[in-house]
Length: 113
Length: 116
Image 1 (tube, rainbow over the protein chains, first blue to last red):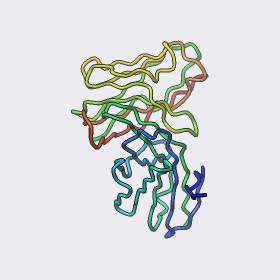
Image 2 (spheres, rainbow over the protein chains, first blue to last red):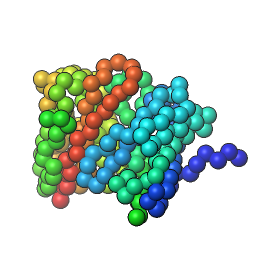
Image 3 (spheres, rainbow over the protein chains, first blue to last red):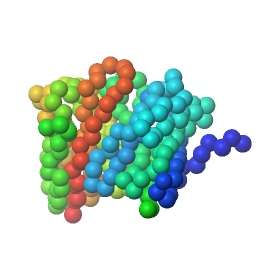
Image 4 (cartoon, each protein chain N blue to C red):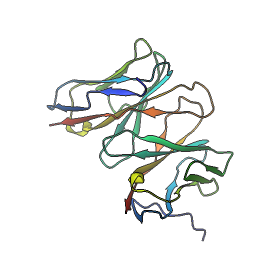
């Protein structure tokens, strides 16, 4: 079968490695997706977003991939740094701006130097 | 200020006590959201305001939860007769966007509520 990428609650990597965090979203009608980073004691911080009419978007050291066929989202972090250690959440939205975000299960990324 | 400000940062309430949590959104942001985040979980939607109008309150868990934004800026989330299951971090987010398109939600640092 197709490898859709398992969601892992924790991910440990070495500094300088590339990290891949996976997320399965719930609603096939979702048209907008966001990745957030949440550090201890802080609110979620925007990392990168992607609309459903795209399958890839790149930012600074981060790339988001969207596979609508299997409702799967991934976040790739290049050259992971200790400062990247945090909990990462994907979020999906359907429709207009006032619609609530639906957050997925978080992944705790630990980066060791 | 430059970000979304929430107060207090921490609140300990005795079971049965009423609490009020405040959110100061980014100036000019039309949309304001409240989310509840239980320990180890992702945030869950509570309610949404567009200016002073509360357009969606479908996520409020019970009638003990009430939110207002009377002048379209500062918002207050009130929880009456708090119970232990209300213990969570309450997050506020604001956004400039009204219609479709990229929506830049900015979250505050939250209020951690502990009911004892």
